Amino acid sequence: MATVLPGGARPGRWVEFFLLLFALALSFFAYAQVALAVEGRLPARMAWQCGAFTALALTAHITVRWRAPYADPVILPVTVLLNGVGLAMIYRLALRYQEVGANPGYAIAPKQLAWTVLGVAAAVLVVVCLRDHRLLRRFTYTAMLLSLIGLAAPLLPGIGVESGGARIWVRIGGLSIQPAEVSKILLVVFFAGYLVTNRDAMALAGPKIAGLQLPRLRDMGPLLLAWVASLGVLVFERDLGTSLLLFGVFVVMLYVATNRPSWIVIGVGLFAVGVVLAYRVFPHVQHRLEIWLHPFDNNLYTAVGGSGQLVDGLFGLANGGLFGAGWGRGRPDLTPLGYSDFIFTALGEELGLTGAVALLVLYLVLVERGFRTAIGVRDGFGKLLATGLSFTLAFQLFVVTGGVLRVIPLTGLVTPFLAYGGSALLANWVVVALLLRISDGARRPPPATSEIDLSAVAAAEAARG
Image 1 (cartoon, rainbow, N blue to C red):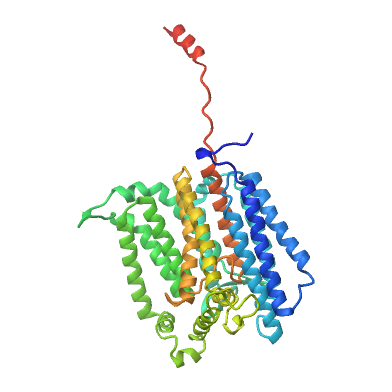
Image 2: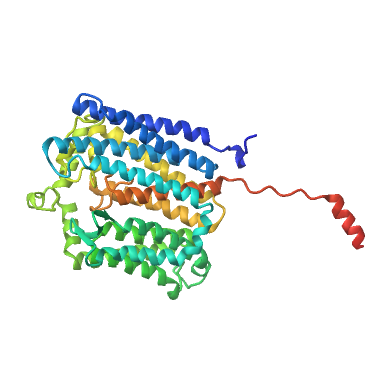
């Protein structure tokens, strides 16, 4: 007999299975359309490539239903679909790069598929080995130490590598990784463990000024530390995106833990001070703001590292119109980094406004399921952990799409699951695995109360009297 969840819900194994089949079908359709439009035929290796991707997805599905049977049935299919669409777009760009002999060439397609395999494997490992998300609370300060080591690693001589003006890479042998992608997960674990322990002091103590409950000065230490750390990443590594992400995630988690608007006010104030300082002191921040404000200035457009890719991406989106040029029929290769930072504009050109909005809705569903998990889980650590992980995905999406659409300045983050990049893809699959594990705890029915033998109780009372 199937187990019934509170509210009449049942484990979603079949819901997840059919949604997963739908996600795989759409991914393979995109792959086939790209090949037919660019080469006029289906790829010779399409059968085994699609089979391998199907095996990956079904392995993840079976593992989740085996080890976390009550996990949210929507999270995994949405992630698979986003990853599949990203692979199709990267394959489309790889064919074009190969045709014209441009960098980075065809190699990006098999590399991204290999990182997908590693990402799904990491997610499966997390679901299998982590039986209860609350175990992570034991490693609160260990996570903090490891995250700081990861953030500082690109600064080490010999292994740190500078690319595109930012020093955010570590190269070991022939492998380049971005340790900040793993550090963001470890920092969320630390923030959740620290705040669930200290939230009472942060929520209840402190003076009240002009109707606003302010924290005590000593309780502001963690916020100031996060502010200084984010500025340190900005100063020494020139990584504006990670700097914003670190500070933003902590402020949001702090607000959720304490329910005090004063923390948001203080966080926004510190952010404003940091922006002014960064603009006045660091030339690369001034350059980013100039590109944002005056992208069509001819001097900025033609300069190396100028506004050329931003403008080209905007023209690509305009060329896509409402329904797009079609898979493989646009020219997204004209935008530098169309496979990475600007993959959203590449997809917008070929899928149009309709396809771009559909992708944003998929992200909205993924983030909503994450926040629903945070609301439903019964322990404070799980609530903060799910909130931080979900906000990490949402913030990355806002910063990336806002940057390429010229809503905010460009920051350097990549679109989760769509863009080329092994470190980001691997880390985001781990984020999804953690959300699946937490959602299993949130949706799992509480243990049944054991029945009490009333006759035995009466006999014990009689004997006692």
